[in-house]
Amino acid sequence: MVLGIQLFGILFGIAMIYFAFLYLKKKDLTINDFVIWLIVWLIFIFVVSFPQKLNVFMDTLGIISAMQFFSVAGIIFLSAVVFYLYTRVRKNQKRLAKIVKEIALRDVKK
Image 1 (tube, one colour):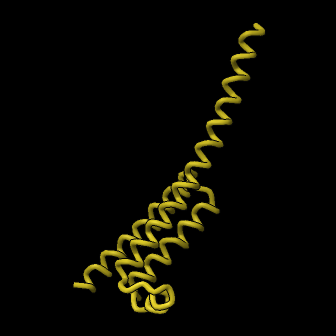
Image 2 (tube, rainbow, N blue to C red; image 1 turned 45 degrees about the vertical axis):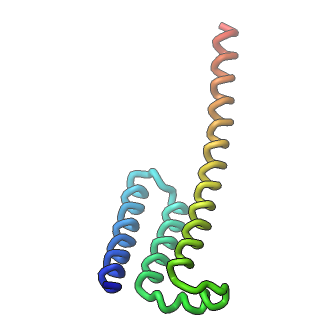
């Protein structure tokens, strides 16, 4: 049973690396973005392949089971991604507002 889940996790990680590479080729991702996602998915594949390596971290943090560890790590990771996306959206909103303002002022002058 565990081997099947591990195999599924490894295949999922490889597929996500492939999708990240496709987005890099379409220029939807920069090389820096690709490298970050590559590292994330390689770590994911490593953790899925060798879950016993997590025992060191789990013992240090006082986490009893791997499920608790993955839940906490997932929440932390998703929180970081949401914060990053929020800052990017705010930055794009400011840029868009500036462009709209410039276009409106240019139209008023005509």
